[in-house]
Amino acid sequence: MNFTSIPIIVLCCYIIGEIFKSIFKNKQETYKLIPILMASIGGGLGILIYYTNPEIILNADNIWTALGIGIVSGLSSTGTNQIKKQMLKKDKKKNE
Image (cartoon, rainbow, N blue to C red; front, side):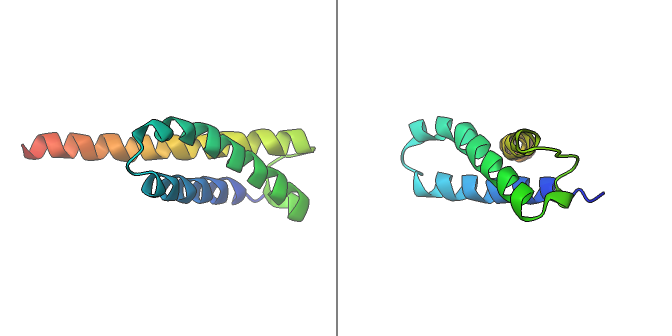
């Protein structure tokens, strides 16, 4: 069994989220849309992978499972961003 679909979805969503943040840099209120956007893109990527190469998306027996895997993977990119942000914040406090 091949688990490459989850890191692919997480990485794609993370990159798209960073692009979104750089485009709307001056509009902080749009940042609250990022988790919804990542869930939507992750779900879309999960379905796309299911239709193009279904053997790499875990145990997805149907499209709904692939959608769920994609949504969770997309949302985990938001968590990855927060881990990075919190670790950098902690390092800045140590340096002060």
